[in-house]
Image (cartoon, rainbow, N blue to C red; front, top):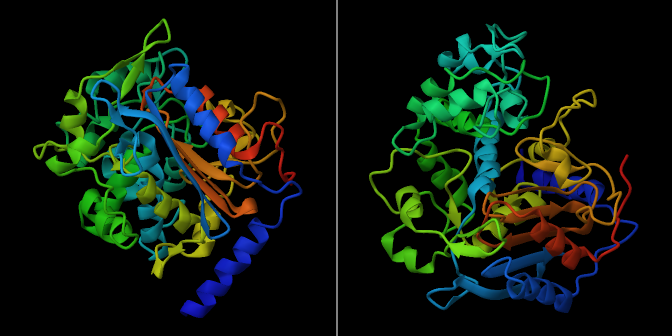
Length: 414
């Protein structure tokens, strides 16, 4: 498609998806500064930083507190953080690039490309195994309806997942696939939404379809074209000094610095074998904002075309059937559905305590409570960095309230 036509399609989509909201976003720098400062002052985090882009320019940047409190190292613009599951949209973009090239169809069975998933079983409520009602498809992987486990629940599938440890750093992605295919499914594909290892299977597909390792493919086709120079699964040792420490909240609510052992194994150990599709990237505010801006622009940034506008639109459209009532923890994020590797806001906030945001927004977050969102209605994108575990929903609520304002509702849904 000619460049001018692509630009026209991008502008058309942005014009439709980003039509002026009934309640436009009015950023208040002081309000966001104060919110970040409160997070640190009340001891919920050691440090926080945020970047907001709107109407084609940077509208906010701010930090508060420490990247490493014990070392007295402040949170800076170039601080690196573990983004955990904010890796997932990057993997999803990689797979959708290959879809644009005609390498697969969305409703192809996963086993067509990864035969190890051809014999996977479903575990029923009595603990018995049976064949699934239909095969899991690539579409199921993209929208978390495949039935795969993630070790997050108490049932037999998750018990088996924790036993075989498919995503252990000692496994390659292909070895992880063999182990994951031994774990029974939680439900028949397409029946429920459940967060899972499906994005790691997406990474396996990237390797199978491209002939490159997932890490190499993403570096060549996403990170390098977008000039995301700080973002990688494997970091040079020199970058360790820029990496924020992770803090873990105890039962008393107080945070304590986590040892660096796991981080070094994941990102600074050349012997690491696992490149997860669903986690593992380290990034900086400016780098991840370049990824968010590409999505906001309909798949292009500074002349680098990553996806077609129609593909971004597809990924940012709710893909869940209304009959799909079981959605694990997804409703905790507000009035949302799920597209391809993004949550998608489908309705206005209904309660004062619900996360603020605009209908049509798409977003995801990470285990250490990082967050990004793309808001076409307000032509805005935001990246929020902290390093706190376990995941703290109050930080996202407070950051969003600082960005949008306490009573913001934005446009109505369909």
